[in-house]
Length: 339
Ligand SMILES: *Cc1c(COP(=O)(O)O)cnc(C)c1O
Image (tube, rainbow, N blue to C red; front, side, top):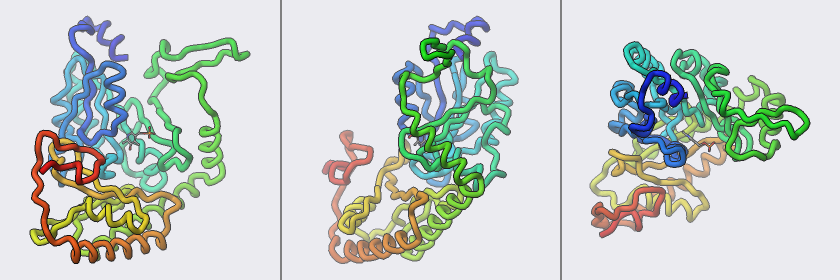
């Protein structure tokens, strides 16, 4: 759409790559999209631990005639925090008043899209905002079906260009197809359809509210341990994340705790935050429908035992220093730092 509109406005579409604006909290799909489609990813760093979201003013300041869209996130993968899309919509509205070419908003609601309408329908982040043109969400997250299913919705038919809909006649009817691959299984769609029909709005609400309660129960338990700073309590979406409070005497890290929890059979990740905040490591639990209070109680008990163990046995602080070769990612702490 951008290319067609830009051409009509006399913008030289070959002078620069088109660009897409997103916060550094983006999920890897956006990096893939930009590489595959030859789009410049304009990544805006999240400012601080207190501001783990896209700055609407900075987002608009980064726009130019080559901007194909801004992507706020409802449920940032790292932390579960939300971008302020009401504020972003306002900023975009102002920008578009004088812009040569208007900028649309696409909401990455992978986690929030099939959660918020059931649990917090009053929260405004969607097509109720004028500049939100498209929304994507994962059926396999809070849509409660198995992996591989995602959805994208456009505000209106005009926003999905006709040229991207291919019509084939050889299946016995004119069949419009819009996707990269041609054949794909229908089973996932049936699963989603079945769940919607079987549980309905009330059912989804009940399932998600239970997940929220389990998440809040986890947060409470973590607070009782007194050594963690909670970054997301799970009140907004059942993604609970936390980090260790600073303590000069403690000789172990979140990575050591993750390791020790494996001894009990838990795979609970520790990982660094993205650009600007990569020195901060956090731990995260995404609560899903099949997690129970009982399971969380066991986790908390094992966590307490792990902490006691680490306090007793890990007493010498490793002298770690970040270097050029520091591996940032979901890596083991041994590899994360070079002595
Ligand atoms: C999971 C996730 C994605 C990727 O969605 P898939 O359905 O797994 O392909 C994109 N963005 C965010 C914010 C996510 O959490």
